[in-house]
Length: 303
Image (cartoon, rainbow, N blue to C red; front, side, top):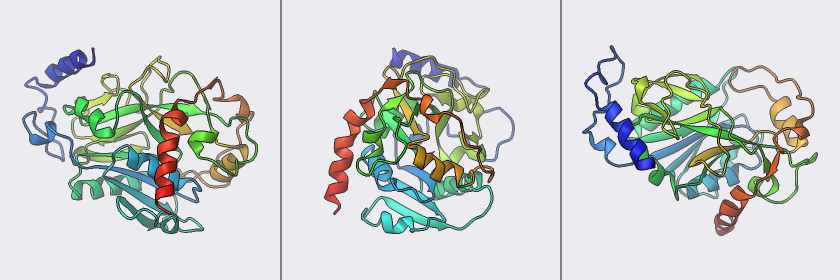
């Protein structure tokens, strides 16, 4: 079924009018270009501030097959370079002292870094967002299904607090937070070809040269609803999702989300009411069972 959908989308994209959508800043990647035949370098970016679980986040995504993970350390009290120096390759940390809304400027900087590095694909996540692959072993296996696309939107799955008021003293995020919604959230984060990026106006996607090449993971055209993919499906039936550990414990939520300004508009959030009643709908150990042992093994091997 997936192969059939891919062939249909490919035929849609192969029409004569695909590349006649007006003047664009970037050159479109033609259908016969070698970049549409293979998956080359892939880079994951984030900006993080005082994220105590950044090692876990980096280890998880290295295990998924990213060639490079690039972390913008935004004013962390303990520099993240000290936390991440256990990784001898595949990780770069750049200190960032910017004030104000930093997210979109850093997304654009990331796209330039990725383009200059010759990356075929990049993804920009927050450090509480973990890419989860249900139908694939690694990201390059996944991206091979979307060679005709220039961006690929992947839905959030919201995880709750597991009713933790205090942050657990031991264990990974994926071990300690095993309650989530059953169904995917409509918000997305987006893989993109950096060579096609024009602008970043929201954390959820990049503006690209050919909006007709914006797809969701379930092959839905995304040019008209770029930040949202309405998809009524449970987390265990989709090909991939972004596990969003939005609160973690109540203590972490206050420290990470309330005491610090937002990175996209520099405003402070209001404390949400009854956070323990949100996103704790079902017991969901799928992420823990699939990834925790491998993450722990990698981290132990680095010491």
